[in-house]
Image (tube, rainbow over the protein chains, first blue to last red):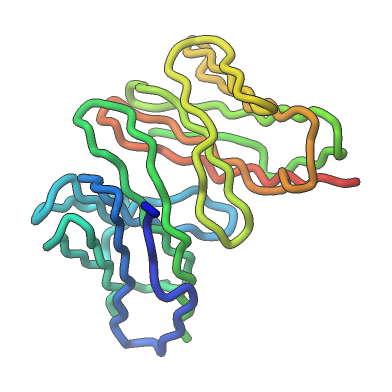
Length: 115
Length: 109
C-alpha cells in the first residue's frame, strides 16, 4: 500500500527544545514538501526538496531545518529559534516532473504543541 | 503580490447543490487545484484545471476562467460526509503552489 506516513500524530514539547518530525513515502516520488497549517490560513511552505541531497527554503523557513539523505525520507526539525512553533505540520510528495503540474499527496499530519 | 481568495465558511443542506468560489492573482499561471480536507486530516486531491471550462467528476465539478482569474467547485447531491474544508491552490509561473485559506463547508440535514 503506497503512501506517506508522518509520526507521531500528536507531539508535545517544552519551549527551548528542538523537535524532529518524521515523513516517509513509498510512492517513489522525487519531490517532497513541508507545510505548516494554522487556523484561518492557507498552507504555508516551509521547505521543499526536488531531489535527494538538495532542498530549498519555502516562504517561512526561519527556525526550521530539513535533510534529504534518502529519497523516501524528509525529516523536519523545529528548532528553538522558531518563535511560534505550535501548529499542524503536513508533509507532501509529488512526482516532481519539471515544469509540470503534479498532484501533491499528503501525509496525515503532525500536530505539534509547544508550551 | 500573489493571492488566493475564497469564502471562509459556507452552509448548505443535505441533497442540495453548493458552489465554492475562488479568485486568484499569481505571477503567471499553470493551473488550479482543488483539495478536500476533513478536520484534522490530510488534504486529498479533487481536481485540476488548466484550460477554461467545466470539468465534471461524479458529484463534483470544477470550473476555470483564466481571463477572470476565477474558479469554482460545484458539489451536487450533498451528503453529510461532504462536510469539510475545500482548499483552492494556484500554480504560479515557477510551478509553486499558492494556497487559499480554505472554505469550511457545513452540511445540515
